[in-house]
Length: 135
Image 1 (cartoon, rainbow, N blue to C red):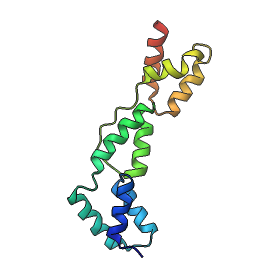
Image 2 (cartoon, rainbow, N blue to C red; image 1 turned 60 degrees about the vertical axis):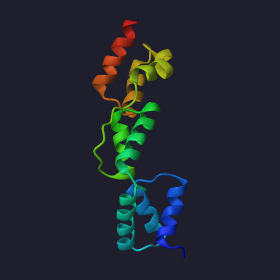
Image 3 (spheres, one colour; image 1 turned 180 degrees about the horizontal axis):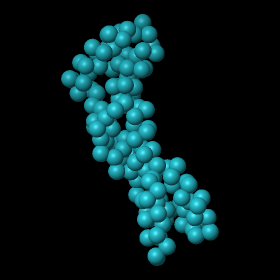
């Protein structure tokens, strides 16, 4: 079996991982939890793992996909656990323009439901729709 350090470097060479994700991967490979914890501490000190930087890139990428703050936070918690990151969410106005403008006003409730599922707050949705209807 490959050494834990070699396996971790091999995984990190392919893509960036949150510490929680890397720990889970190494546990699945059968490495001991104590060895994994010490290796993760070492990788953080060396700069191979940086959860805050990776989280900010993740938040930006998900926001660009059109997700709201609630969905982004939920996805981030699943990947990294609890992190203190500023979550802005996507631009609801451009999302409405791109994806839902043809459904307004006749299917307004469906648009609201779709935007709620994407993680935008109800108040923000109503404000954005009101602004859209003014145009």
